[in-house]
Length: 310
Image (cartoon, rainbow, N blue to C red; front, side, top):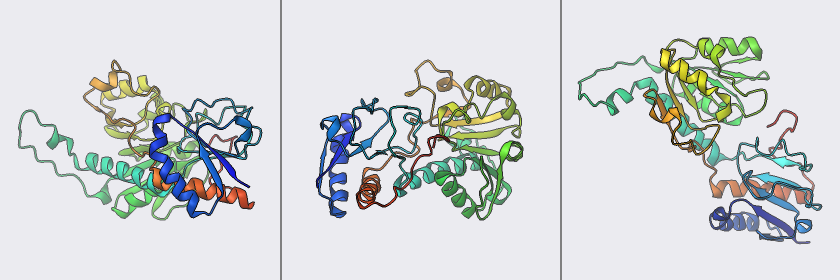
């Protein structure tokens, strides 16, 4: 029986994803029809982006699963019309992209590279940073992406700690959890990386109180989610020198509005949500694998826990 697969993402994504999806589905030997224009009651699987026009899943009476193209699922987990399994995107390309962004910016701040790159006075300004073994980096969020970044930084010699809501064990990483664990993690974070999901429980994880718990002059990297930070509290902490610099890749409103104070702040670097784009080739293989598993009665990979929000 032919499996009907709806590509429910922005139209401009279709030419990029279609050949990769077809190749991956062919490799799985599936009998399928992949399109953008099925009638709702004909759809078996939905390849989905949360900014899709599909927001009401009620008419999709035959739907077996929704396969998200993004790692972030906050835009869909609170949709009460979605009652079938939802799988988030976990793939090697996305993980590697995040590792590279985080590692690049950790090294940039660790080495003090901005002093050389942005030097309008043309001063011969020698900065001797500590070695990695003497620099503390902390990661909030030790899921697939956080774990991968932590392991890479450990491999470079950094002192790495991390915090998650539930206990974790990662070789070479000092892992904390719970409310007291968050305080301990922040206290030792010269460079702090935010990789938590966006849930009601994580909103404003960085606020006036938690920013004050960081070592003075700490650097913040946020490739996770915009709502993790209380923006006004961060601006105040930057102005006072409590926070030395913030490199931000995600925001509450995207694209970041032109009049937002982050753009002009001398201690803020804005990047355009580029830390880890989904790569069509690797993502397509994950989607094809999940469809093949669904058709053969095996459990889906990377299912979202709707109660926890990720």
